[in-house]
Length: 221
Ligand SMILES: [Zn+2]
Image 1 (cartoon, rainbow, N blue to C red):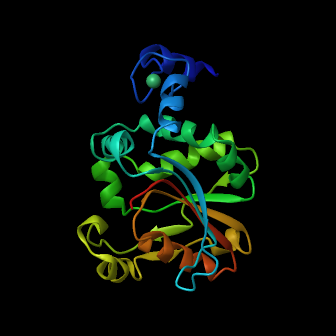
Image 2: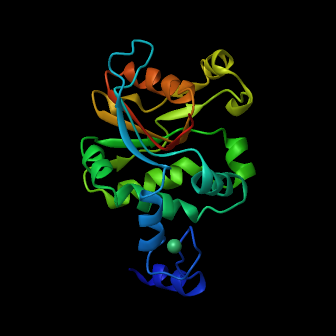
Image 3: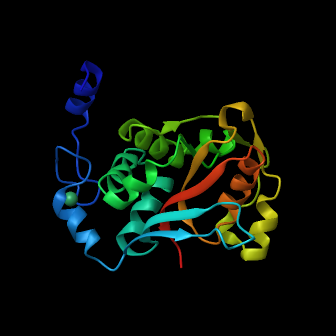
């Protein structure tokens, strides 16, 4: 821990993101075990290679989008709690299966938001987690500005599957394409519902002959 981190720890002591008890980590062992033993825990890596409508190979996720996980994601996104990124990162890096999966990738990127939206929320929730994952997993690097969002479209959660696909069409633009050429890339998003957003992002990366997979905290079934 460097000096700045020590100061920050003194002002904002680390606490478990679930039970909020002061902890040496952002997730206490008890809460981790409780959630892993609950029916929210999936820990799945879906092989999507045979699905010709998808531009990515695998989708890995830890939880169902329900109960306490849904509550925490909503708090993280809409109640100005950027520090919960640490807890979500711990869920990923404390999971052996996910860690093994992460090690196969060179680059992790996050689903981009428009500048206006980032300014409104104060942070891009998926970027914070992607950066923390790259900090903790040796061979995977976080890259910023690979994809940028160029269309301020409607919020996906208000639309049906067909509308979602239409809504994200041409919403992203590839930048710094040379960095990602033929690399193994992981796209991080918070929730997977129909997969329309991440699929549109993956489609852009495929233009550079990348192997693309998806990592999300939860899947909404
Ligand atoms: Zn706890």
